[in-house]
Amino acid sequence: MIFATDDVYVDLTQPTDVDALVEVYNSQPAFIRQHLGRTAVTREWMAEEMKAARDAGFWSCKVVRQSTGRVIGLLDVHIDAETYLSLPMIQRSYAHQGIGQHVYRALESYARSYASRMVRVDVVMGYDDRVRDFWVRNGFQAVEHITLEWNGSTLPATTLKKALEPAEGG
Image 1 (cartoon, helix red, strand yellow):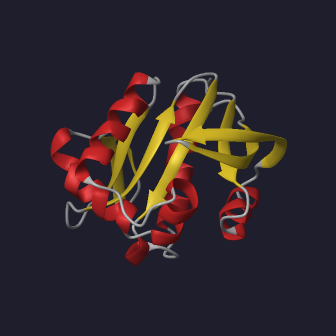
Image 2 (cartoon, one colour):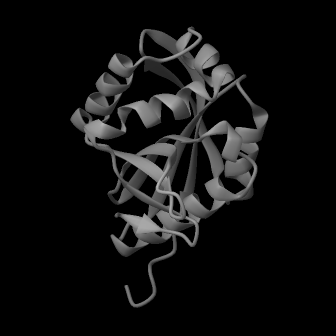
């Protein structure tokens, strides 16, 4: 386990998690259409995506409900002086219950403990304004407009960043 909240924990994905991660992705059909131009992802796609994240220096992580042991979300993260959070996603049936908020707060605390001074997230424009609003509510500010290349798609996005105060005692 990397870090936890009262309800969930975040840990590195394993090859045995592929089916559960496919279920998380496929619970978000609008995301898949907007970002990937398809209707669903496959086991093979997911396994390649996990490998690509690791090859790029990210931790491919799962979000697990503590009470059931069920994978209910995912995120890729690279912890450094500037922590880069990529693809945070909670399964649709668990959305809007505060889980994403709790995971983000725990991630922020974890990043601080490793002397990270900034968190970055890129948000695709024209997808869902609630996503950008979530990050703004959590103290992020837009710093630049960029273009993301992902799985053969070119996506206009905004980079948002948040400065972190040093961890207590750090």
